[in-house]
Amino acid sequence: MDSELAMQFHGHLVVLGFLSDVNIASSLLDVYTKCGCIDDARNLFDEMPIKDLHMWTTIVCACAEDGQLATAREFFDQMPEKNVFSWNALIKGYVCHGKPVEALNMFQHLMREDLQPDQFTFGSCLSACAAMPMHSLKLGQQIHGILLRSGFDLSVMITSSLIDMYSKCGYLDGAIQVFGLTSRERKGAMLWNGMLSALCHHGHAQDAIGLFVQMIHERQKPDANTFFLVLMACCHCSLVEEGMKFFDLMNERYRIVPGQDHCLCMVDLVSHASSNDKVVEWIKSPPFSFNERVWEILVRSCTIHGNRELLNKVEKQLGELDHPE
Image 1 (cartoon, rainbow, N blue to C red):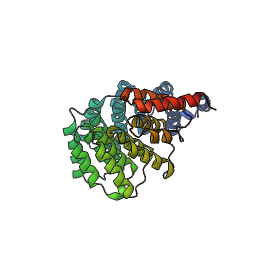
Image 2: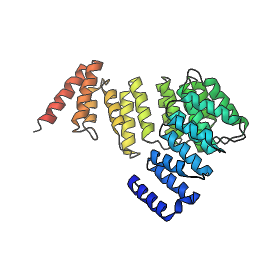
Image 3: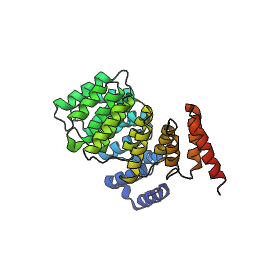
Image 4: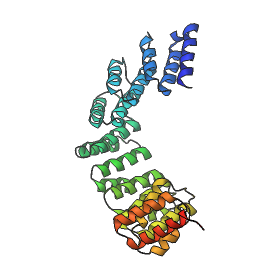
């Protein structure tokens, strides 16, 4: 439903006198927030003489998602009762809008309440720690400890957040340990990608390539992001032939259509090449063939890296594109 239709619907409900029903008003509030009509949602909320917990949580969530954090906090503080969803809404809002300190302060307040955090609470707080890596490793470790002591089920989302937190807080061994202790059954592409990203982030490109090979051997299915990460690792190590093989593997075996990021990464990689004839033949094949923008970027990359021999061959190929026989 779009915003105009939502307002028309609102008008009909007023005429029919149905807005006195809290359930109907709550549903309309949901509609407004999903349409992005935050001001209309606030006006409706203010008009309602009776507000249930769902309505309070909805308006806090809507304002927090929209970046109206002060307003979200005002509504939150006015709530006659709170549940974990309302806490999560405000904590996530702080994280998403660059206020990790406030998010972690809210988490500490929550831990003093008689409420049990859920995986979304912990996930947001670990993201907050990752966003302020110079100061929050200790707090991230404390959150990890709470998870372990409470017997909390470490879902894929939580495990991924732990790997990301440890990596961005500069503790790669912590990320490796979390990944290593995760059962094979739970290691989907999301966790493999998280560990690949951590290794790349810390400059361990060779280890990232080794992990990717292990992933393939364990018959785990990589996705587009997996291949982007391993191509980046090849780029860092100037492993041109390996990168070309991985790119072809993505195309031919896994039928993943290369995105712009993959193509630009490969352009940067092949500009390091010494086997120039092979590179030119390879890049003349799809998806690079007849893509003039790719060739022009390759010219710039060859110039930056001083690869004069490949530059001459690429310029010749560009001339053939401009003047086909």
